[in-house]
Image (cartoon, rainbow, N blue to C red):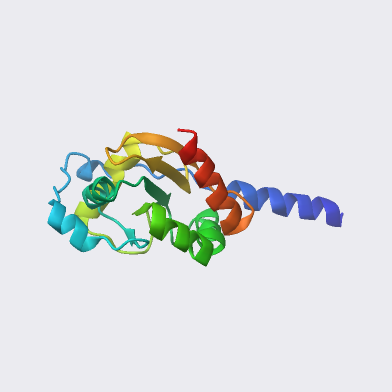
Length: 172
């Protein structure tokens, strides 16, 4: 009986933990994204830190000649997103690698964290463009916005995740 209950609980967590993407707000669908100048982009980007502006990430990636790691997340409600953040993104091994090798772009779809209409429009547009089906989805892009590869949560912690990223970026 305990085994059946345990299996049921694990299955429920797995099914409910990773939710599909919410539908885009139709009122925001036709808004255009703001253009960031190079100076604005570099002023808003610090190597190894997460930014939320797509144009700034593109400009920084082109200037620094680095790929972009795009984190499509539901930061305040998605359990797998929280797990990925805690096990990987907040760990020194990932932070050190990202600071030296990546531009970090966070595209968040929160339920209770306020966002500007402009940010919501940008994130919804990119969610549609990259055909994101669930969270977390990590998209690796080049400095022109072309997808290199993608992944999600993977067990093993920061060291394993960094090794996986290195492999994905060297086999593009």
